[in-house]
Amino acid sequence: MQFELSKALMDDILFSMEDQNQEFLVDTLEGVIINKEDIDKKLMGQGDRFISLPVWDSSDGYRLMERFAAGFRNPIVREGLTGALNQGKGVFRAFKNILSVHPESERLWFTFKEREMKKSILKWYNALREEWGLDRIGIEPEETDDLVLEDFQFRKGGPDDLRPATELHQHCLEDYRDYAEKNGLYTLEASIEEPVPTWMFPGDFSLVAETGQGDFAAYISSICRGSALYITALEVKPEYRGLGLGETLLSRLVTRLDPQAISTVLVDIPGASEGFSRVLLRENFKPYVYRYSLKLSREPACPASRT
Image (cartoon, rainbow, N blue to C red; front, side, top):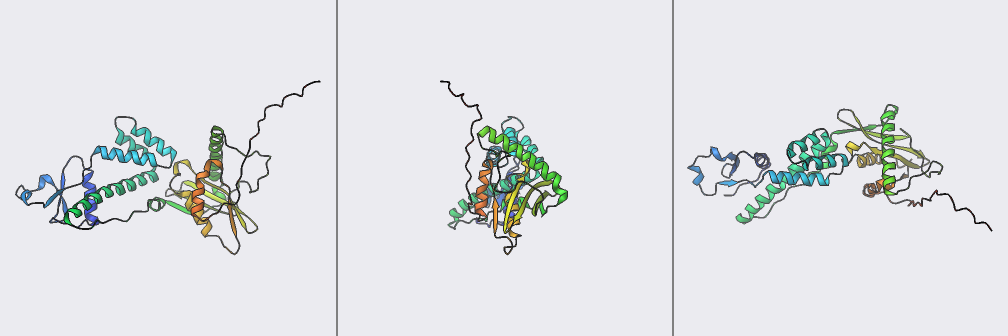
């Protein structure tokens, strides 16, 4: 029997699929979900009035968690989730515990899980529509990043933000030096004259991102040199990386600039952050200069041979 998959019915199906202790069916006549135990035996004989829900068990849930953890961009959260999945017993509880201390990541998980489960429901429903001789339908994907960024506030940076910005900058410098040392990357010596001004905060123009609880999460700072704006820093706390904060800060800074006063925006990308170039390209930045380095050995030179 044909029925319409309304948003309300889809939500009810999704909720019922996660209940592993009871069996639910779709009452196609009423367009509702009903517990199989509550159905009168006489009604059960009414042809195809009652349809089983899409199959969903604990193994499906585990595979979904694996996919989420493997594709998560924040390395701190990703390692924690992967460790939880590999611990053997209590996997589901451990997974939830890791996310509970990272509210923004937890929201990403709920959004991801709901989206993927709705895909399963839609696949199930389209299979029914094919049996009915009807065309397949689709659903509009949700903008996950926008949902997560609703948890953050963005404002102009000021002197009161100097301490947390400085602490974050020092942390990022230490991370970069460790990464560069492990991967043989080049780091500028203090004696080398930089074509781009060095770090400062708040500079001429800066923005700060903070959580709904008022915690400092990320910032971008810049200074003007004539008609050029140099972005001197764009840094995000480790626990908030992978949520789109850096790209949002960059986009908001650019849209606030006066094109009559600023003609060019310049930013250097360290070797360890080369992946951010994709964000810059999306924001219509173009490569300005490529910097290559050759790190010379400081081993003592061989003594000159005597004649």
